[in-house]
Length: 88
Image 1 (tube, rainbow, N blue to C red):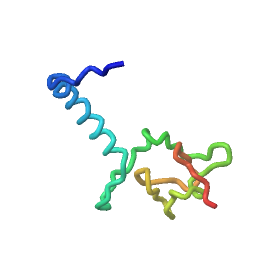
Image 2 (image 1 turned 180 degrees about the horizontal axis):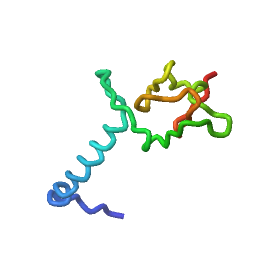
Image 3 (image 1 turned 60 degrees about the vertical axis):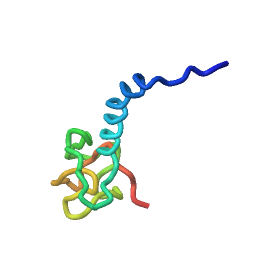
Image 4 (image 1 turned 90 degrees about the vertical axis):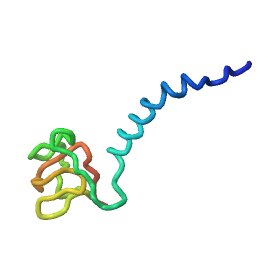
């Protein structure tokens, strides 16, 4: 099976798509310079009450008294979001 060579035109047409994917991926990756953008309550599906026994105060991302490493403040210690990860 022979491969068809990639034309310069098809490569140039793909550049905006590749750039868009790279930019979107960069939004999901933490910034190595330390200036992270935290997720909104809506994006994290944050709610001010526990879910199935899971709550922010028992999550590895929670920073007392009312912050989170991933989600914008304020965070209720008894709240919950989709990024919950139980502390060991």
